[in-house]
Length: 92
Image (tube, rainbow, N blue to C red; front, side):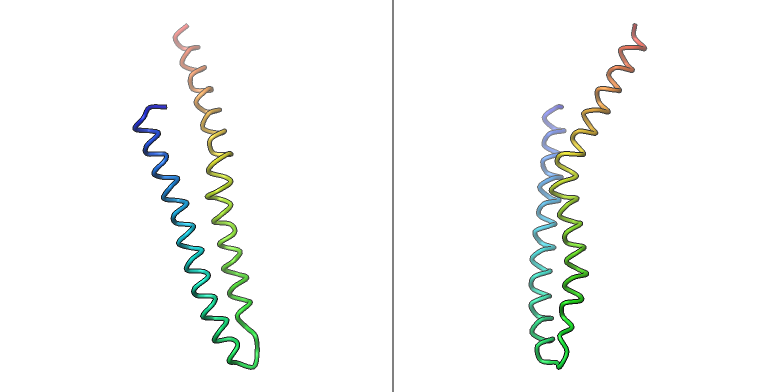
């Protein structure tokens, strides 16, 4: 992998992680406000949006921290090897 490709990939991954951190911060702030509002009503309803949004945040985190780091890199390397083998077969 060339240096510009490496730099682009590093920036993309850092951006994805920063996006998740922003998502988590907004999740916490909004759900804290919803819990305060829910505490003032006779029913505790704030758990429902927190659970739904929390599931979305969990999926976002899995994609950013698990899939893009390990699985994606493995698939890219496997595809690179396959393409190199095809090129060598055509040249020989």
